[in-house]
Length: 586
Image (cartoon, rainbow, N blue to C red):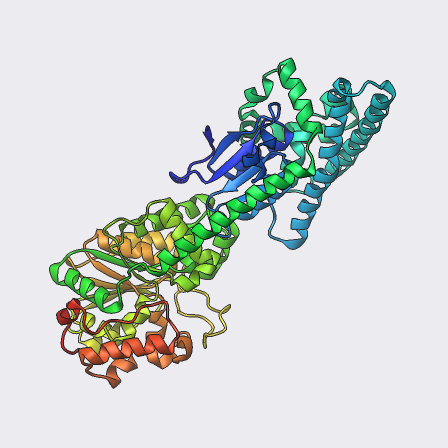
């Protein structure tokens, strides 16, 4: 099958069931405009491919186009969508393009999409039927004359409606190009052929718009996508079979197809249940095992990156295949206080984050119970689609930063350390240096997350840094970041950006742990700790418990998992072989 579209990975994302007609062109134009990678699967409507059971399971109304998105916007199993207008709206939501975010502007565009679906498309199709196809089916000239007059007149009226709208607007829905234009153009550009080219004299604004869109490179690519498929003439036998197919679809045949489709759905649901069961039983390192691995890397001077992937990382990792620009803009607004970021800079951020995850030695993944949310699903979707996890990657939980705190394991990592680097919006270097006897520290200040939208914070803003974080501050940090010796430890915050900083630290020979919002807790201004209170995650706990035995730490860890209801995180065993590698106390 031919593949088209902009490539953002090895995986083919969308299958488009297609034939080169106005309705088919809507889908190819939209996919080209959005830069999505897709595969064309021919549905030869002359030969009756649209009536085959395998296609009817995707498009029960036996009409193309239809798509199957193998990595859908909402996550989960591949999503099949039929009806060209529904496809356009879905792709607009998936990519955040060509459909305004503003509610009023959104519906101004959608009303023209529905106008096309209810008026221009059907009237053009009926006009074509009576001017061309019906002559081979109906013998009564009066029937042909009435049908042709009725629908030609209606197309003429609709042309006037569009011309009037375009006399006051550059595009159908206003000043911005949208799916309203993509929906109507494939039919509108054929009006001259249907009514006679002289009709353009009466619709100069419509003609201006038709020519303007035809000059867009993506429209040209979508319009030309395998046009040769539709240029083959049918044999007499094929024409006869085509007419019989069109006129002999009854409810019994459709019921049989629906039964077959139901069996397919049941099989997919069973497959999904098996995948969830596998995810639930996937072996993940607990906090003690992660501690041992990180400590070993520090002692050996071996570079290491330990990152955690949550919903925010899912939004960035999954763009544009599994999340849309609207999602990314909301994320950027929280972290850099603006969503006015060039698309090239957004794509650079996405690529950098994917590279950081692929290079990480330890990756914390969302808990199984969190996978009902689309942004968490995007984490696993991106990892699978872009091969971001190797056989050597050690897997733990995204709550790793908290899990290490439960067992007070930051103390044996930091106690008496030669050096500690910090990348965060909070400068707590002196506090950590005094508490753990660290010989030298260096703080790299970055802008923190805007937390005013959270209800469980007791502060207005998380940090004092106000300089632009991305792209300017981000690039500056890349130049300034220094690892003083192999195995030097860094603790890193800063959301999705922090994972990239961990990657940079590893590249320069250091050991990096992504501890995220734990910086806020250590500064005494964090979130309210899932029912435990801020104090449970504060540095004060280390002072109150100057020493803890190995067995006490394991018991504390398991008790906190139970208190928090984290039953999808396995408790730490007390008899595992690695237990003897832990210090007897810390």
